[in-house]
Image (tube, rainbow, N blue to C red; front, side, top):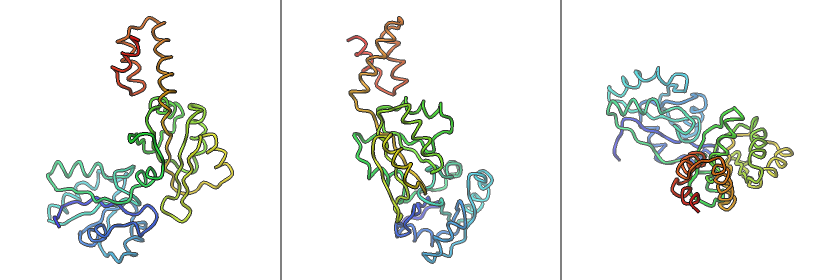
Length: 269
């Protein structure tokens, strides 16, 4: 097996059996494991009898650790990066050090493995393959509404805390009352649950069912016919305001992330 200087290693998002044989092999063979919370990672290491030394690496010390990592790698030692759960760099630290290591020509590789987005979406029937991953939604209601309006024809995937999810669902329901939402919680764990329904029904369901654990969610795309009707309506409004077809196509393609030429043809028709 080819050796690298720096390994990005996914760890289970709930069920410890989801770790790969290669991940265990790498974590045992490297000299240092960089992790978000050493207490969390140590439980995983103890379970698989991995004795490798750990150092902390989290969003508050990312830049501080650069020189230390470079020093370790320059000595010919190997480093593995893990997050508390899932794949590093997905809403977890890692981007800063990976960019720096590539600048210094150190070899970097990532292992396949557990990821909440992939695990969640593989249980959600969708009309298309494309989606946009937001990470954690912004706290501002205005910013959330802007995202919901901008990506009407794409599935919007995001993480949310159990404390905020009902409020977020209320915003989704008010902004897009015909929307369909999918909620996945406690993925791979004993109480795993995936609920897919009209947003208003999902709200009612979780008002009477306890919401705990990590949550992955998706606002599913609107039907094309509904979207086309909305675009047609906006074209009509902008034409009445005196906008030319070229300007309308630029405006609507920017707002709705659709093909500019398609909007232009609709304007002409």
